Length: 193
Image (cartoon, rainbow, N blue to C red; front, side, top):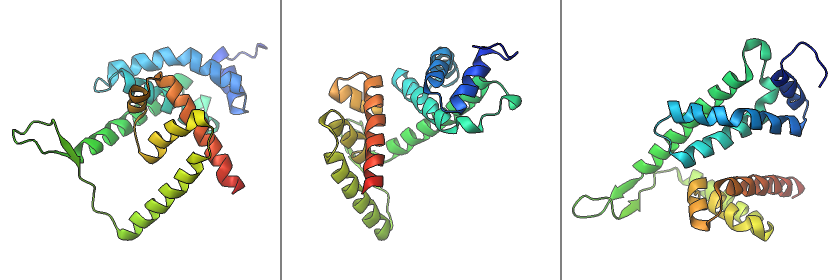
């Protein structure tokens, strides 16, 4: 790496901005530990699986938004932690919404048995969602077998990464990687259709 007076992290960011995937991988490697520690310390309501999920989503967002990062406005790790914090709040809110959609049907008030109580929706919205889900299902059926079941669980059934990992017995990072690759293949299929 040529000496430019900048820090090695600045050079990695510069290379990542121009599309160097290895630089972004190096950014992951040099920041993932501190990001996990930040989430564990500041987001105590997240368990291990959610911390990993937030880390993955944070880096996905950072990768997509790397062009908007301005080193003059602050350090990369601070920018990354801000993304992680916002992502964690989104995950916590999403989980809270999901939990509110369940009601206990046990006579003793225990939450042993639950039933989903869907929100009332506009009939047109429901038709659009059904058509979209149907089209996505058709595309998922065309995916290679290695991605098909996991993509169906995430994109059609709406399962969380953690739930998919537990159900399939796969590592959480394997689930994330396969879903990411499945989404890329689906996007490619959609543009070719």
